[in-house]
Length: 261
Image 1: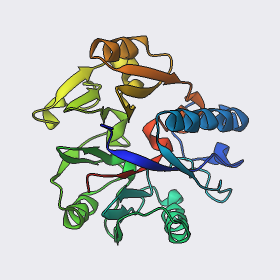
Image 2: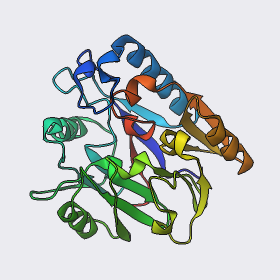
Image 3: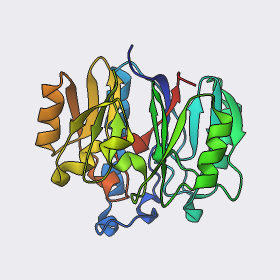
Image 4: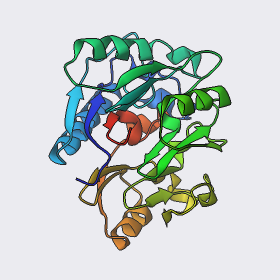
């Protein structure tokens, strides 16, 4: 399989999800019941693609915990536990560490981001040609420096005004990225090929490559879907509107165990 992971952790939305940290003007319209249904569909799509999905318990004490990507960067040989830039989310990383200790799923040795460093998984774009990290509203230069010390992979920091770097770009395979150039400068990724999507569909740049040319994207973005098809990919569309209301996207809902570090 040409994807960079075969196992991923997920955590369903809790009943408290409507209290998540979000700047979306529709955040007060979150439908938790619908969010739970869409999350089940998300998990089914991943399983159908051959991903081993490890489903953790919902956490009522942590409304944002459905966004499993952020607490850690997990690898087969080396894992990095993050320290949230968003202080209201701190504690989610400890919950994950505690659950990792009780699971038989193997992850790499744990390294911990320490103050004053901050890092959130949504800022990390993992490729088979290096790792790119957004220096953003949530991840600072100290966090990036620490990540570089933990990994043997080449790590490149990229300044961004986005909440997370993955809000504007995602890696697919074979040196190809899907990107919203209005949000992320393609020049930040020298040597890569790009599927460029227009500004009015930039939300679809947060996409999850599932292997065998399958790409999970939010539904309702026809130009992005069409461009993926032009490049030989098979877009799989899912309604993630309830997670968009919580400032989340497709990649936010899972924490893969990457096989490149």
